[in-house]
Length: 139
Image 1 (cartoon, one colour):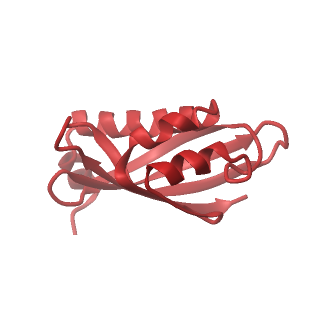
Image 2 (cartoon, helix red, strand yellow; image 1 turned 30 degrees about the horizontal axis):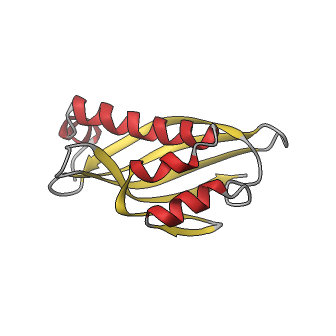
């Protein structure tokens, strides 16, 4: 099994930067109630799993993120950190991202991880989320 340095080196800086930007953009869209733009950051068959359920495909992602109950009922802000990325096949990267979410109205702060699979589009070369699973660490 490769050590931490070899795993980090296996993902080039351009790919790492594009995936980090993708994750930050998704958090910003959710934080600013731009649910109609969320599906564009996922593959056409993209899937998001959380303790609240599963959203699969563009229509479900759009509907899910426009529903306040799906978002935890509160406007909030995400902080993302500790990106750990590794190759997962041709034009695919797997990774974990630590997140902290603070719900503004309730003051509730949640700590968790996203366990992700990213795929590079053959059409435009952009990285998109193929699968995201939210794992709560504390709530």
